[in-house]
Length: 265
Ligand SMILES: Nc1ncnc2c1ncn2[C@@H]1O[C@H](COP(=O)(O)OP(=O)(O)OP(=O)(O)O)[C@@H](O)[C@H]1O
Image 1 (cartoon, helix red, strand yellow):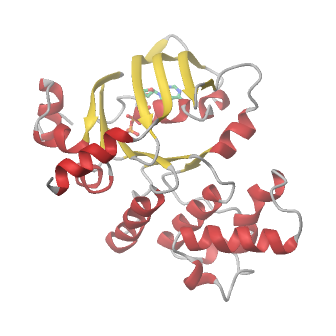
Image 2 (spheres, rainbow, N blue to C red):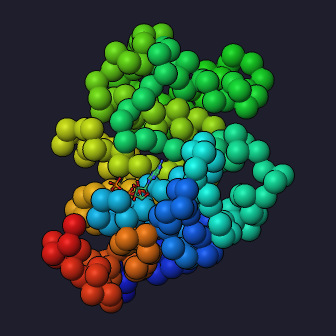
């Protein structure tokens, strides 16, 4: 079996982590997402692509209820994480966001030390019984985020003193410190130079073995490089979803074809 076919089989074998059905999102009277249905697989990088304003970030924010923080935003439909409804009244959004972590477009470390940036989540969720355990979580998270070697001698220095690419990896370390199952990334490389972008992309590929990763990107090259599944959004519709290779080489919908060939965007 050639590598590509093997890859497709590995992708399709992964179990469903998040399942979204009939998701509609409104900002006031304006509908931003129309009847989105999609299944996000475990141990897979899923890319959301599409022209500006098509609803990629809105849908990403539905997956950890970040839209709850926007007063005029209303979400309808069902989103299940491991078969449990994340919009159920019983679900605490803070606990949910520990399981479904998020990394934003601009690196946004807290105005605290490198150590405290990573230790913050595990502390508030009571994940460490003592300082030794907390130290271990901080080290493990920084290692997974490929930042440990660069910061291990200055853990008490401010996170904001790191370079942009290092700050973004610090934010990734902070997001993975609570052992999330899903990591949402909203254009995580848009503020980074090409070298830092390459480092973060490499990291995304490594994270896939532990997490389900969903990434919003404006770069089709990036989607092609890092993801196994791609969803193409257009004007609030999820137009096409499938294996990244098929979306880029053999799109079914003419709108997808027009976007990837640069005719709409
Ligand atoms: N907080 C908000 N209040 C009102 N409308 C919003 C809000 N956030 C997004 N929208 C609207 O919802 C639609 C989808 O926006 P969204 O940011 O999800 O698109 P996007 O595909 O992520 O865009 P981009 O690629 O430019 O980031 C747009 O029409 C946008 O104006």
